[in-house]
Image (cartoon, rainbow, N blue to C red):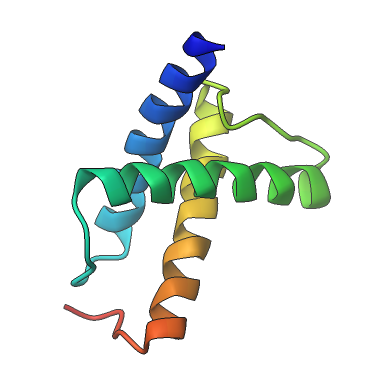
Length: 91
């Protein structure tokens, strides 16, 4: 259980950082928000992977596919957040 939490935090940090690098702009929060963004993105990425590609991974899957799906999910979460708050996707 503790190992799963640690892996989820690592995957979340990686996915959140990549998502923020791909979609730059001013967003609130620091590393904690980035990690949470990545963890939520991993869960959403898992749903997207299962729905469209019949390939799901858990949020604690430390693999290339898991990280890619987490980044896709984090980008979706970030885009929804920016639409909801009216923030621009430009810097």
